[in-house]
Length: 427
Image (cartoon, rainbow, N blue to C red):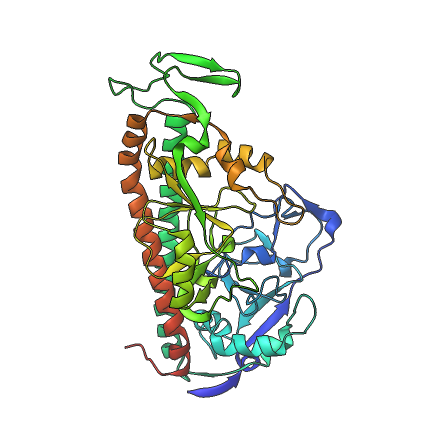
């Protein structure tokens, strides 16, 4: 092992200053932003938070990146972002902007993939955090990154082995993400086919509406619905709605424990709980919260604050996490199933209705009473049961894949510092 400054083995180049007048909703070149870092899960992601992601002005070719280029943020848009790394997935498509640093390894001194993980390692992140400019939004610089110190293996082949091992874990996590994206799309298509197009199986197993199933016009919804389906309120499908607790002056949450404390920020639009940036409480606090929340297998967690549509179906009894007051735990009534209720609360139709009813000057959200009063088409229980039988296996596979990715990420994050400092070696 040898001690180096990052600047001894790599360079970091700041991106171009891109004038806003050339931002566009279409074009050939996409401007990189901090939203392209898949934080805190790691790696590269498409930026779906902005519409004007294209840049149509003139660009120095040096700032048009190639597949395999390594980037790192120079601005901390969210806490902990500094030190993150991502790899450009495609050549001649992305423009490096001023908030983005390009990491250029000297491959005679350091393996490229080892450099990728070195920049994002805890030892480098701690130094970047300590040296970050203390403004409202914190910044780092190419020089600050290059000034960071670390111990690395002298032998490049050893570095290469470490990079390959960590890459293998990340590649499996990325593969699981693709699998889950496909499973999510299948679930949505199935829901839309049955409950939007009304082509659920009729008594002969054929698509209901397509095969002449009887429909009746609903003036309240402004559309036809199956003749024996009920138009009612969402309250008919809900047995109970509970929430957790928030820290208050008269209620002190004991922090520092190992029980995850799930808030709306941990619920995602793709139907997950993201535990990677989760607060924790101890067992005493958890017991106090659970007296109110009473979360259980089969409940649907629902983020009450916009963006509406963030839900999670609890498929196993929760044993090491709890919820706060901004998360609704919705238990289905005997008129429906957990699977239908989960997909309904994620559906475009419900999100549109609920969003129009949201209130709040700072954080728009939906109240329990408003949620219960939402007008809803109520399918017969036997249709919900058939849907459950179709969907449950798919959701189970998605949950297993997600759990595997979580464990792999934990393994990667546990191995990373020890591989970097030589406590663990690759054979």
